[in-house]
Image 1 (tube, rainbow, N blue to C red):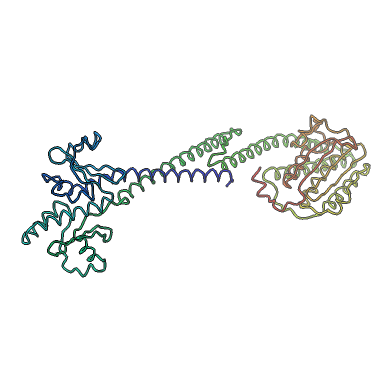
Image 2 (cartoon, one colour):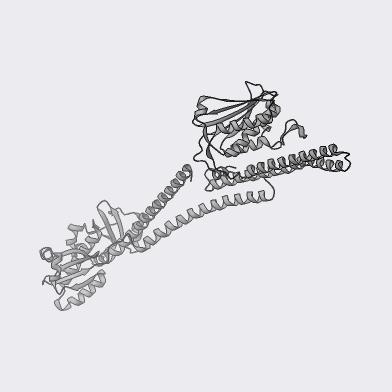
Length: 528
């Protein structure tokens, strides 16, 4: 995966993760703020309503005032908001958070408001509830204490039970605290409990409702649903874009199948299928090129085959009327030459087709380029003794003679260039060989008329012959230079043309890497 695309993908995943975390935090804080207020109101409601039921709570429960800022006042003096006043008018218990903790409010007697301040709501309300329960139980007769305990338990929404075996509380260290202060607050398995000592020494345990739990299962479930929903939306978005990109590729594939070889997928760098688009467009380019090459080959081959076949047919017809052995032999030699020409043409066509349609199956091996050049020059010199074919190489080239190449195909490429130069040369051909640590270069120059610069772009085109002749004397079939170009392509190199500065004619050059250790035919096919 490309580094830029990977970084962009990771950045989007990180942004999505941060967004989900932020969403969960907002939901957690928002929901728990409402749940916290609701829980505080519900938890304090039994105590406040019990206190408000008294005709004079500030006098009856005066011992609450020093610790909890407890009292009764007018709503205007308390500076209550209209919303709180409206809720109090409906008889609801209201909690208001302030700098000192929480203030609990409820409509009291004579239209006033009873208020109770708590810095630690759960602990303070638990202790206040236990104090109210202790005062009322101390005031009840011993015979009526059980009934009073049940009444107080229902009114204050707490559990009340007598402690039969005080020794069980020694481990908690509660007894000393109870005997000193009359009560002790503690938590057992997360639930609040208050141990009180009555005036006659009886120990009573007050069990309170569970404290506020911000991680209740509905909250966790809601966070999971919200996270899952955000992930689902992100996944739908990604899949929608992916489906849209794939549909685009599909539509272009359909167009190509219907014959529109110029159809291409618009490449977008940020697309998740950008590599697929690049590979698809490369495949489409390769298919279009193969189709064009096939069309050109069919057209050119039909034209190239027509001339030798016509000559063979004419020679066969002439054999019937030959007079004498010499005339017959002449016709047979002509037919043999035409068959040889057909054989060479077929070989050229097959080689060109094999190179164009995916490359030959060969492996680059370390071989002596100097030996190949010397062999080609020697062979061409024997074929054309009237020419002077020279080799030019320096000392460095002789020392670095070995290069990674396919000997048979490189021999064919150099042979095509030297043979082509010999065909048009006036009398001299120069083969210059240069090898350094990184590259190999072969320059084949001649002293012929050269090639006009405006035709340089055409010389490597299949079946292109700049003299427009189709006779046997012109030589070649317009495939030699195309084969040279493809052989260099498979060597990860290039073939190009220029003008010879030393001889004045054409100069064909081959350049490719000296070492192709990381090169493979399969990897090269990816770029066709």
